Amino acid sequence: QVQLVESGGGLVQPGGSLRLTCAASGSRFSIYTMNWYRQAPGKQRELVATITGGGNTNYADSVKGRFTISRDKNTVYLQMNSLKPEDTAVYYCNGDLIIMATMYRSDYWGQGTQVTVSS
Image 1 (cartoon, helix red, strand yellow):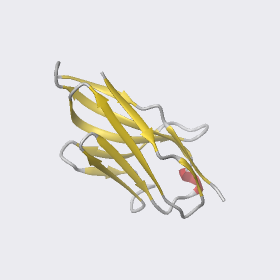
Image 2 (spheres, rainbow, N blue to C red):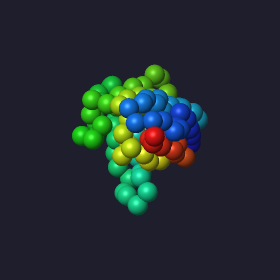
Image 3 (tube, one colour):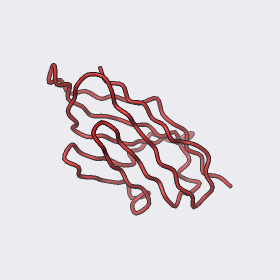
Image 4 (cartoon, rainbow, N blue to C red):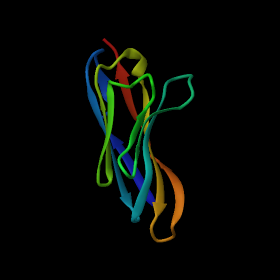
Protein backbone atom coordinates (compact mmCIF):
# COMPACT_ATOMS: atom_id res chain seq x y z
CA GLN A 1 0.00 0.00 0.00
CA VAL A 2 1.00 3.60 -0.60
CA GLN A 3 -0.02 6.64 1.42
CA LEU A 4 -0.22 10.14 -0.03
CA VAL A 5 -0.21 13.08 2.37
CA GLU A 6 -0.82 16.63 1.17
CA SER A 7 0.16 19.83 2.93
CA GLY A 8 0.55 23.51 2.19
CA GLY A 9 -3.01 24.68 1.72
CA GLY A 10 -4.40 27.77 3.36
CA LEU A 11 -5.89 31.20 2.90
CA VAL A 12 -4.20 33.57 0.47
CA GLN A 13 -5.13 36.89 -1.10
CA PRO A 14 -5.76 37.17 -4.85
CA GLY A 15 -2.46 37.44 -6.67
CA GLY A 16 -0.65 35.52 -3.97
CA SER A 17 1.18 32.21 -4.06
CA LEU A 18 1.05 28.86 -2.32
CA ARG A 19 3.04 25.66 -2.69
CA LEU A 20 1.30 22.34 -2.13
CA THR A 21 3.30 19.26 -1.21
CA CYS A 22 2.33 15.61 -1.63
CA ALA A 23 4.54 13.08 0.11
CA ALA A 24 4.22 9.44 -0.93
CA SER A 25 5.29 6.62 1.38
CA GLY A 26 4.78 2.91 1.91
CA SER A 27 5.45 0.12 -0.55
CA ARG A 28 8.08 0.57 -3.24
CA PHE A 29 6.47 1.88 -6.38
CA SER A 30 7.08 3.19 -9.83
CA ILE A 31 5.30 6.29 -11.00
CA TYR A 32 3.11 6.18 -14.06
CA THR A 33 1.72 9.65 -13.36
CA MET A 34 1.32 11.91 -10.35
CA ASN A 35 -1.54 14.37 -10.53
CA TRP A 36 -3.16 17.25 -8.72
CA TYR A 37 -6.94 17.49 -8.86
CA ARG A 38 -9.22 20.06 -7.30
CA GLN A 39 -12.87 20.19 -6.37
CA ALA A 40 -14.74 23.39 -5.70
CA PRO A 41 -18.09 23.40 -3.84
CA GLY A 42 -20.88 22.22 -6.11
CA LYS A 43 -18.49 21.32 -8.93
CA GLN A 44 -16.97 18.14 -10.27
CA ARG A 45 -13.41 17.21 -9.44
CA GLU A 46 -11.09 18.44 -12.19
CA LEU A 47 -7.57 17.54 -13.20
CA VAL A 48 -5.23 20.49 -12.66
CA ALA A 49 -1.75 19.19 -13.42
CA THR A 50 0.07 15.98 -14.29
CA ILE A 51 3.68 14.86 -14.17
CA THR A 52 4.75 11.54 -15.67
CA GLY A 53 7.42 9.22 -14.36
CA GLY A 54 9.66 10.61 -17.07
CA GLY A 55 9.04 14.18 -15.98
CA ASN A 56 6.67 15.35 -18.70
CA THR A 57 4.04 17.78 -17.48
CA ASN A 58 0.59 18.85 -18.54
CA TYR A 59 -1.81 21.48 -17.21
CA ALA A 60 -5.43 22.47 -17.36
CA ASP A 61 -5.94 25.53 -19.53
CA SER A 62 -7.23 27.47 -16.53
CA VAL A 63 -3.88 27.21 -14.70
CA LYS A 64 -1.33 27.24 -17.52
CA GLY A 65 1.36 29.82 -16.92
CA ARG A 66 0.41 30.17 -13.25
CA PHE A 67 0.87 26.67 -11.74
CA THR A 68 3.92 24.45 -11.92
CA ILE A 69 4.03 20.76 -11.00
CA SER A 70 7.36 19.21 -10.07
CA ARG A 71 8.70 16.08 -8.41
CA ASP A 72 11.63 15.20 -6.21
CA LYS A 73 11.83 11.44 -5.71
CA ASN A 74 8.60 10.52 -3.94
CA THR A 75 7.39 14.05 -3.26
CA VAL A 76 5.30 16.07 -5.71
CA TYR A 77 4.82 19.80 -5.54
CA LEU A 78 2.31 22.22 -6.99
CA GLN A 79 3.56 25.78 -7.07
CA MET A 80 0.59 28.09 -7.50
CA ASN A 81 1.21 31.72 -8.43
CA SER A 82 -1.10 34.58 -9.34
CA LEU A 83 -3.92 32.88 -7.50
CA LYS A 84 -7.48 33.85 -8.28
CA PRO A 85 -10.68 33.44 -6.26
CA GLU A 86 -11.80 30.79 -8.75
CA ASP A 87 -8.82 28.66 -7.70
CA THR A 88 -10.54 28.14 -4.36
CA ALA A 89 -11.07 24.40 -3.90
CA VAL A 90 -9.96 21.31 -2.07
CA TYR A 91 -6.80 20.09 -3.81
CA TYR A 92 -6.12 16.37 -3.99
CA CYS A 93 -2.93 14.54 -4.81
CA ASN A 94 -3.37 11.43 -6.94
CA GLY A 95 -0.84 8.77 -7.83
CA ASP A 96 -1.24 6.36 -10.73
CA LEU A 97 1.36 3.95 -9.44
CA ILE A 98 2.81 0.51 -10.10
CA ILE A 99 3.56 -1.41 -6.90
CA MET A 100 6.92 -3.08 -7.47
CA ALA A 101 6.20 -6.17 -5.35
CA THR A 102 3.19 -7.14 -7.46
CA MET A 103 3.62 -5.07 -10.63
CA TYR A 104 0.00 -4.14 -10.06
CA ARG A 105 -1.04 -0.66 -11.18
CA SER A 106 -3.50 1.25 -9.04
CA ASP A 107 -4.79 4.68 -8.10
CA TYR A 108 -3.99 6.30 -4.77
CA TRP A 109 -5.43 9.49 -3.30
CA GLY A 110 -4.49 11.88 -0.56
CA GLN A 111 -6.96 13.33 1.91
CA GLY A 112 -7.06 16.76 0.29
CA THR A 113 -5.98 20.20 1.39
CA GLN A 114 -8.12 23.35 1.30
CA VAL A 115 -6.98 26.33 -0.73
CA THR A 116 -8.97 29.53 -0.29
CA VAL A 117 -8.23 32.63 -2.35
CA SER A 118 -9.99 35.63 -0.91
CA SER A 119 -9.38 39.20 0.14
